[in-house]
Image (cartoon, rainbow, N blue to C red; front, side, top):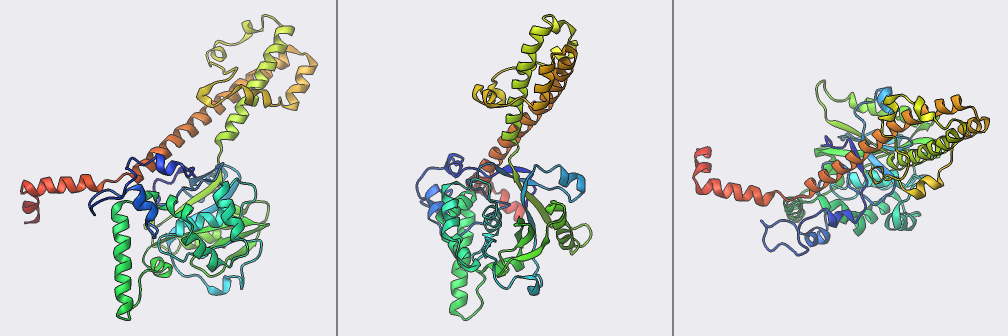
Length: 409
């Protein structure tokens, strides 16, 4: 269910309407594609393949392909939380807190198919240093004194979250959701058991839970549990490795050969940091060049051809998102400052070579992140695209030509 979760940003809410190609009118017939109004006015939560998108700045969701130390160490830092997708099994109730601690923002999942949204909110609302945006910040402040159950009800009625979550809904998702509600109503009239509850969903399918570092402790936040679980104090500032055994224990419950789980990390978006480091690199190269002009006017004659051919960036460059303002605000490292003050050309030349090699890696990292971002946008657009009209048209053509009858016979 999360095979495409490798590197994704939490998109701005404006991306919801921009990414959609449908018109802003209600669909006239059941077979017509779901419109923006259909999605906005629908009261349910659609089932999503993986995490939805929220307007949180400076973070992204990245797949954790394994729990090997090398893989975990390669995750961008800081890691704000881990999201574990697996076939849910009820945990020991004795592990839960009696009440939700004041410092922990935790919400229950009170409606079907909202576990991805709940898991993400249970992470981002516990990170003190990220920009939630006006809507989520207001929601966090409003629900600060709520119980987990009341927070879950607030999420179920939070139009901002519901619209973004349901931006991935297709018409069939909406129809299936409405059919489920209809069947639930009939079951209640007959005195039977409703299937439209978060607990029933967990028994049948997959579920997202979160692991989050809060105030020096690792917490497991599962929206289907009444209260959060305290997994212990963080040792050696490495909370990810501390959460690892608990996740591995759940993985071990599957039979050999079954891959019915996925791990996602909510991490700091690395692209702004790469661009900032590139700006500092360019600023440093500029000052190195100015010093070498004074000390050794023919210094370029001593540079190897491979270095010259590297096309070093020495100023603003739109390809890398590098602006004049970013370069001007950057500070040259103190170690380089000290070398420049000594006025030794050989040492400065050595520094220049280091800076050129560093820049090569920075530029490659920026391009990789930019490509990843474009892939995320394309994948999101694909997930929002309504394929059912094309499928219906194909089936009708096959039926008219008698091919369906032959296939059925």
